[in-house]
Length: 277
Length: 277
Image (tube, rainbow over all chains, first blue to last red; front, top):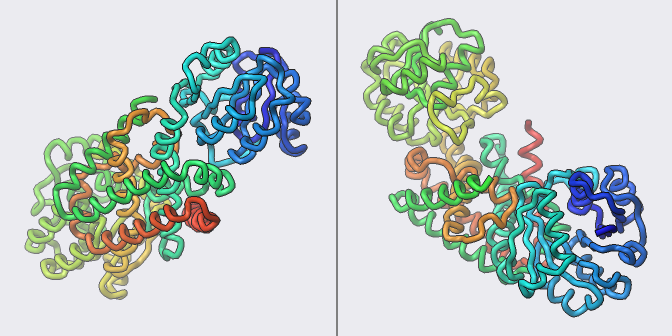
């Protein structure tokens, strides 16, 4: 792997560039983005230079699509003619089946392997880039077939993911989308709903740090979430329905010992999440 | 104010003792609790010594009830005969009307003024006590009449609350209970429900820091929450109902621009909570 093209040099793309450099990658890293975003990414040391898409991917052994989902889908439609034979295209989209389906139809000259690094921040852009953003974080890969993980290019990508500290999990794209509806999209909407339902509340100062924590995700930008919600709405619908059912169960048992069981289950999940660190 | 009795020397009680000392209080601080809890509180420097309730409150100018709500109610029933004339009794219970109602009936020889410091941690006990726990945190006082805040003992309490860095907010007890149902009890149950609904989930590692944040409150102990939920269930029921309604609204609009408005409202609340710091 001599040359990497990073298409979309926001927080994730720029952090990936920085992480590669930090892990010892010595090849060229070319960014594709607006002039301002490229300047920020070059300034952060995340890419060497910017280039138009066709030029950037022409020599790239790895093409990393780290745009919003809608833009990734658009890029995929225009990418194939410019790719180097034997290259690997991967992405960082937060939902996978729609992207994988589009790539299967559009990308013929190179291999596509869907990806999703489970890392982020409230702040956006290359200025917030962090070489350690993916360390100890799950990075999902979604091959259609296990053999897709064994091509030379895929093995090389996995080597670099190991070196930047990411923990690779392999899932079917639909399994991925179902899981993240529960573990990522539901928490986001639970936080947004909590913030929204309190929008008219007076005396917000009458609260502890718990409410502040519970509304951190509510700071997230709708611009990032619009595509996620639109491309995974069936799984998200079911996840919200299950959450509402659980809330109704709690509501009906505010004065009964049944709530002890719900607290036990809730604490068990919270503990499992903290044990993996 | 020469002598303070702290009834219940867990996290809140012991932190209050430490905070008083740190702010320059030079009188006696006597704790009422089990032998083990007293030993921990003495070891932390939060109280000078332990004593039985009747002995501890006999000389106390301020009696601070920092037990669970059920135990505060029980203490209030047995307290009056032992109180010093002119003393002030206050508490740290997370719901106020039931406590204030009981105190109005039972405490005759001294003044009762309900209180609720909006501070906490996931960890319990005097070993976690922190002199800065109340700094920049809201401390609600719930007098029946504004004049209750102007007695010499109440003025002295407010002086010490200022000195330990707490921000006093005065509310009617029912207003307090309605607000905390939204700002404290709802976030707790939203977190518990999220943890509980994911209790059977495989692949919990496929998540970002958002889910970890959103399940921090789910680590809370049911032992602390049982009484809160039982003594504020009407307000909590309404708060959960409004939250479910908001979630249904979001669920129906996963693919529409209406969600942009919900994200805007959610972020507005999250921003307001962060601006007060």
